[in-house]
Length: 353
Image (cartoon, rainbow, N blue to C red; front, side):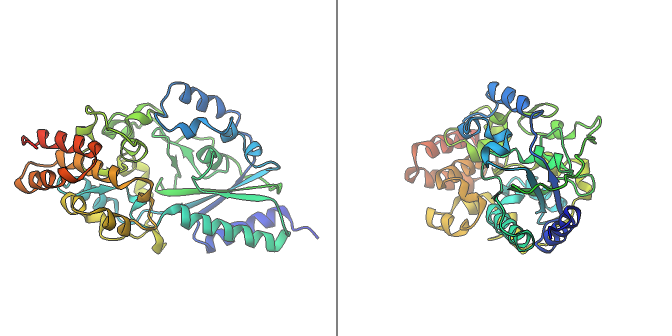
């Protein structure tokens, strides 16, 4: 006898909670209302050098084209905030400190969520038998935020992140695309941002060019992670001490007063990255970088990009002899790209190479 669909979804929520997910929602596959927004955003080249966003022939907004036979999407939310936001703000405001986006302080979320989503799929298979499905976590052409919104997990805020009314926005999303026809949850149709524009006001590089519109080419996360080459000079002073990603639009969002700390050890900070100084990280050689970022999302960037980002941050730090000395000492042994950013930093500090 086939299980009752509503009872099956209730079980999915229970299993998800056991696996560390804070919320499980179900939606269908219709993203036709989101496809024109995506195409307009791409047409304006707001994606910068992220060519992968233009690939896959429209599959990003058509789940059944990505995984043939897909009828339903199981959307999962997993909170990751590793420390009180006041501590993160203190590090951000420490000019000698290095700020690493809080999602990247612990284990790579791709690994954590994929494993738990596969476990969730296995639990489901034990009840319904073999079924078609694929698991995704920010790892394929999937419009995960619109899907999560449609599954009732929250609304897409003016900063383009998903916000949950009771828990803020410090969470990862993952999906199971399945050929099971599951009863959908009501979508989040109400936007609770109201007249608030805090995220727009605090964005260091004015990357949120209008409510709900992000020009990734100006976003610090793009500049420090996705961009492989030279960071535009006019944006370098605005990066401050952010060496991997940026959290400002979340740190200062009023809805995040409801955010809760993660209970998962995977997302606890490693190697003291949450309080590291710029000079201590700049002193790493490549072997140290590889050792200290093993199993981390920071591995998305190369050691060259890491050095580039730190050189910019040191150029934004208060001038002192130790900083100038470290930049000069490192310069002969780095690539031309890093040399360019070191030279910029030294000039900004009133020194020479």
